[in-house]
Image (tube, rainbow, N blue to C red; front, side, top):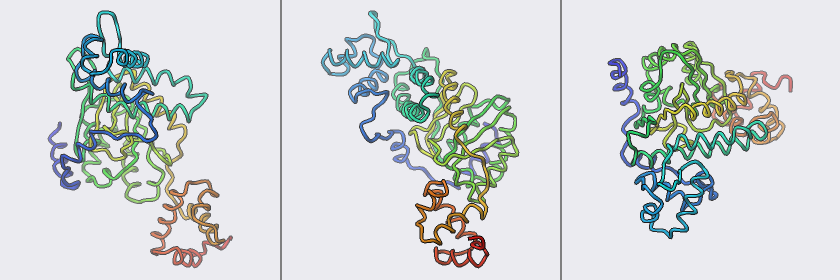
Length: 359
């Protein structure tokens, strides 16, 4: 790490405050999903066995049975399901354990053909697979051997998501694709830190970033994005970005808990197959995204005209083609613009300003 980076990190750590051990433990433990959706379509017993296998690496089926304390027939059925999903290899001479990144890549590969025919459904299934990868890697790392040959780097702390790319990525060309659901860290960062990262990114051949649509409503977020745009980053927006991640060359970065918009525990996995698939996933998100266009008075005017007729904000939002959350943000931006704190005062200020002159 460069001396300049260390100095800036020391300054930035004070901005974010301390991070207690229990918070990191809760993040590292992961979250259960609602509705009985389990890892790779497996049963809870399958998941438990897989975690045991990754931690202890039993050499044979008999060893796996002894490790699990379950009936041999049940263990064999679990092993069959795990093998069918590329998570374990069962041979007469023993058990083999592919790296979770490889197993995930194989499973996602099976979805690529469906991506064109059923984009929404395929993306949802791919997200579920990616969401399970951090948990798999945590179990795998307990029993990892040097011969496993898959590099994984994990960082913790309030600056982890920023520092991970600076630490492990190639700063001399190539492409970087990233999804950034929350810009809080970059808004809080000093200008010196932002400049440091922007200068490093400027050496890349291609830079693409997906951010939430609401960032176009706020001056501070836009100012940060403009700085990175000057370094060559092309930004587009999504109404509801998935969890934070990036792919750079043959490396993929993920939060330890998928879906966390501002993670403080993150990992990078170096695996070319997984990186290719993550990039395909990003490309589909990019195709669905919209341009980075700052909100103007035109953004809230259609909403206010409809609301002036007695239509609720939620209904008005849907009528103009945005979700209610975006509608609420546009109205909040209008209140800030006019310096008012109630909808009634907003209506008066907007009308006085000539906002309803064509309504």
